[in-house]
Length: 173
Image (cartoon, rainbow, N blue to C red):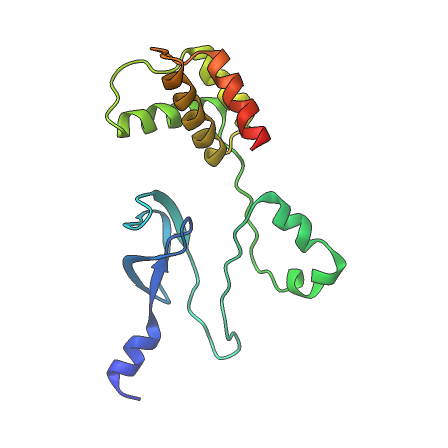
């Protein structure tokens, strides 16, 4: 084997866990990273990733990373998936955000958008966090819907009424 062929086998692209597109980073199979901040130029999101033990020996033909909602674990527990479940080497469950983390997340998103003033009442943020149960995607969806409702209602600050309407709209849609 030539050097170039070995090099191509040992290097792979890092894919965004959110949009599944290639990022601008390539890693070797023996690379290990803990809480590496990965920015995706396609979806403009930053996530923390862990990369461990991607080096494949002669017995292992593939490394597969399964990522999904908690219902994925329920599906894997079904008898039909038992052979696959037995081959899972490592399993990690990521819990939802705490309310403090959720508040910080909302404020960081607003700050990232260039907002310097108060947008949500404290009670409105509490309502969003209660409905989202710590899931960032649902927090984003409820905040976006609340902002749209607040805009259409000419609100200066998003209140709990706007959030409750957003929650109802999101549950129906």
